[in-house]
Length: 469
Figure 1 (cartoon, one colour):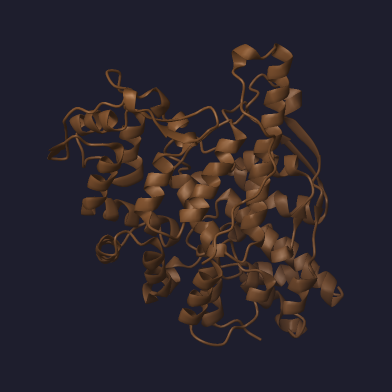
Figure 2 (cartoon, rainbow, N blue to C red; figure 1 turned 90 degrees about the vertical axis):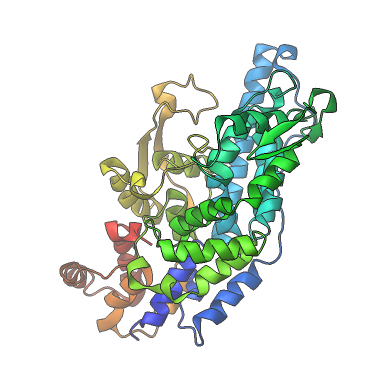
């Protein structure tokens, strides 16, 4: 039952448009790729909010709290942020709406934002998930009015006579049109237009009219009494915005090196459609060039893709939320904690000698309940930065439930002599080294069928090749 090129293309699609194939998606699928693409979009049509139970009530100011109350509140916030993180991670791994979750994950890196307030974090995750496949203009406006973003980029302090330029600058440079396509004067007048945008004590967006600069402004060659909404509209009217976004999407979903001719076509389509995200992604995943061999197995999995891919393939359910966050930290990608407003650098930045070693040990820690010892860095992910080195040392077994039976069933009818090649074809996007295949043959000789499949799965997931998708 040799895997054909069609099946390899399907696996490529499941990795790029989602978080890797689940066992039921590893069975040979009749019909065209376009049929599977349409099903991916149908499965992601409906939006359901991520639901995480958080403590009720408004947030008192630090001045109103005793030191002990502040410590208790910080512990509670850390626990709730962990709960949001792991709930979203599990949703990424288990939801049939794979494309919606993958697009929301992309936007999470694009609109990189950090907050220590759990309700703000949950609200932002759901904004990204709700608008993930909708209209980019609607997404941009929702993020721009999002209390987490307003707080992160200081627009809460942006007021008439004392404009704060942080949000306006990042909105232009990172979120829409890109560096080199605006002036410092454009930033200043955009900032004036966003004066008065903020949030109230309940964490809801509010327009504080008395703090808004209602004077005349010139922005990108146009003059008027512009509001924040006007600035976003003018930016979207510029075709360069469509090109900037399309290039970033191509680099994330297709290849790190953009094809200028394809970018030109895609960006024109995106612009003409009024920034219809779903239409753009459908074009990408339906294109012949998307499935070219050069694109298959060409990307290094991000830590989140690595973890969720393992969860999907082997029905892994992590029982210890803290351990799951520790794994993310050790791999340098923690959901809700991008390193800065530019997001994660990605690509080859995911891999160095220590991170590769940790990636290759992770399957052993999960499959065999091996003890995992991690000494975490004193980094800016900490909500409690005064932790001792002992407190930063994680040294215990990862508690996880694993169900390998669905994966075994996919291989139930595979002849014994073909098993190594078949397992490798399912788990690796790159060809298996013949010398390693011969070694695996020796290592697993005499094993029962199920034990052999389990041993091969563990061994192959621990390879450098498994890091690619």
